[in-house]
Length: 98
Image 1: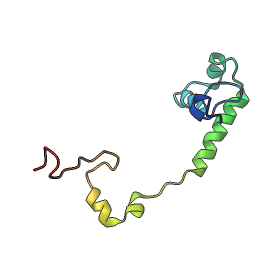
Image 2: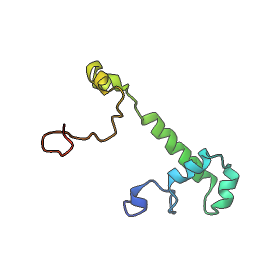
Image 3: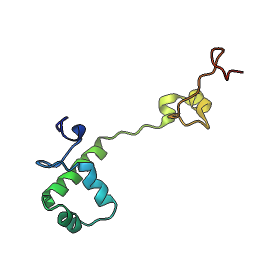
């Protein structure tokens, strides 16, 4: 991976084709033959390397239940809230504080 090429994303050797692009195209249902026709510089080995990389990442990814990470009390307080949404801060220094 080269930080100067596609912001350091994994690319197919000797190209500027991102591995994620090839995986997205395959996931969308395009066949290997269509992919090879649409991208003449691409080889079957390149596609297999992309799939191998995705397999490696899937095996390396670890998922942990959110309850185990937060604990039951904090999880209960978060019910109904998306943990990724920014929260508005309210206080006497804010105009909408009440």
